Length: 229
Image (cartoon, rainbow, N blue to C red; front, side):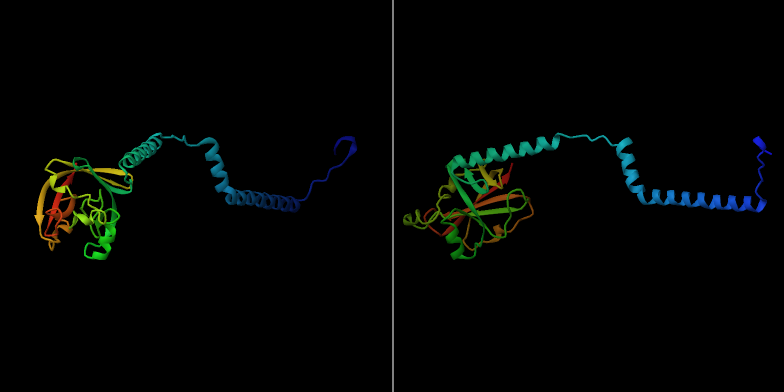
């Protein structure tokens, strides 16, 4: 009997068992729901926890910025240098000793007179199939010394004084806003039909300049062989 004369009747054993079972089932559903929610949203929760409590320190390296700036400044300097010489920084040649500087026309077929004669009216020709500066192979450039004084105005005669170069003289090639310096190794006189120099010899990078010899004739070919320094 309770206070104020109220009588409480205890539930039967069966009811208590059913109540406990239902309570357990309810708790199970709640727990299952919580686990399901955690499973569904765990990737988001995990990233949020990592961001808030385990956020990695971001180290900003200035080296990349410095390198980019240095490259940009170097390219600007090259463009200014070539502009003063009256040539471009994309592909051109400068030979200080003989005051020769000219743009280079890339990938010209040395076996096609129509193609190379047209190219030589615009600049020095780069033989198709040979390499470019920095690639480790043979770079082959050619120009007329002209076969007649009347053709000086028609064809590029920038290599007319090529024979004045000696071992140790420097040749500068500009390519893709970069500067490549070569040193003359030797001079070679060969026949017009000698195409062996167009193929690399496995000795590394070399620059070959070709012109007609003697100047004003087409009897022979004068080759200047230079190596990068």
